[in-house]
Length: 421
Image (cartoon, rainbow, N blue to C red; front, side, top):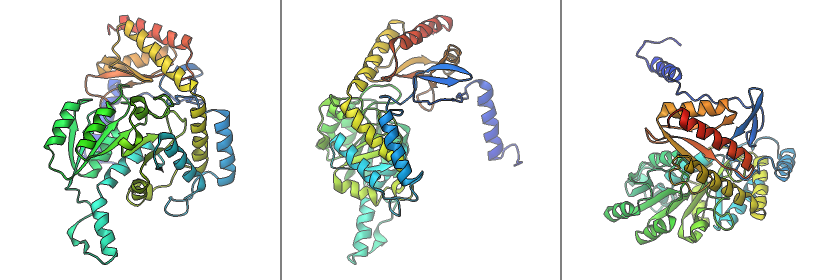
């Protein structure tokens, strides 16, 4: 569609061309095989993949696929509607009960994506007073003219500065007062809570930070939540299935009881090899979210075959701890060896191991050179990370072998000299 040089469409096109011509536009390869395996087929040859979230190798597990296939035959491809309408299917409820049991909570609510969980649940919590007023109106006990649906004036959200984008967007959509506290800075969080005059408070933090791979100080955060009568929500998308003696996640890793956290969010995309997200907590809170989270009410749920397959994947992850143990061993080895070659890994403690490059153009060049050597490892840059903090974000899985990691290490050593990193 034609437009003037200053029209929105023209400006968008101009910016896109600028980014593409600068070499910063992401050149994501078209893959001709399963991207859940450590070796993938791109441009007619094998490539090593070091960015897959199939952490425990369950996406292509024979038992997972067989379970999903049976569900596909029984229920068909899609769900046929939202959970509030026709699509409240038994496999969805079974998945919710299974993940709640796994993380030690009373109940859970599932979403078609982890992003949808955060952008739906966080604003929903702020609606409690409006929905209370609405309920009283329906019961004939009061009038609704005192409170609007978007009235969240009594809420303040305390959000970790390195929280995932889905948390950031969920907090923005909540339309409450926002207090962002510095990364893992308990002192500043305590000061902000102490100064707050709001009657309702929510603290939100990632469990494992997706770009740095370090772990939140959840015990101290939980203590502050209890002290200030605040709700606490932990996004454990990268922790569940991976951390803790039984793979229960960041809470188990720290020895924090599930009862010390109001809401545990997670995804089925990483450790469990599927897709989708969930939030687990007390049954009454989860029941509340079913009538307040817009991304649950107005969206179709997971395809039944995915729900069934993920439930099977949780069972396998629980009974085969060697999977998470090997993934973490691989990450420990890679982190130690890449640091010995002069790279900074930004405090990584889990399976996510970033190598700091800094300059955005140099990071793009590292990705390009790794691709030339047969390695797929995209770089992360603004807005995923701060300007000047570009990095290659490596993910170690249980399927990576030591020889593959050593080959990667050799390539990174060469590039450090070639590019003067």
